[in-house]
Image 1: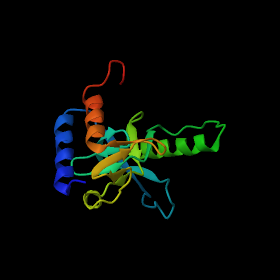
Image 2: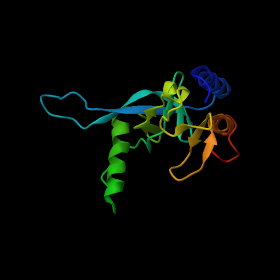
Image 3: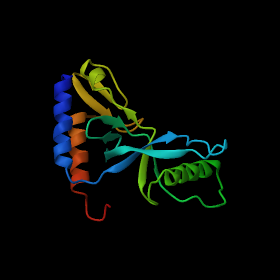
Image 4: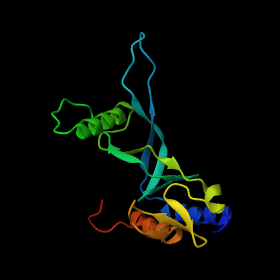
Length: 166
């Protein structure tokens, strides 16, 4: 596994290649202040932006593991056939209440990747050491891919999307 400087260099190169590429919103849960002692519905508050690179999110100063993703949507009365649909709609409405425009992709429950742990040969999120190289497990049952190759492939797809892939 390379030192932290090698990891930082790899991430800096990716950021440079992504200049001008679209970013997506990051959010965190926050309970709003009570009004006249009455609790208000929780909201998703803006926490920055990141480039979405599959199971990773790259910000200006960090690497994050992707969590849940929703599209902000105004709350409306709907009939749901499954409780999971109801819960997902509540999260989308919380994003809308937090000020995200309708339809915007919002990332929540993301986790920071510890670059010091990786440099020391320990795993962090979907990134782990394997034979001295940082690798990414891009799905729970999926194979691993070297981080450098994974970033290169994902950066290329985001910076130069295939026709019709918007």
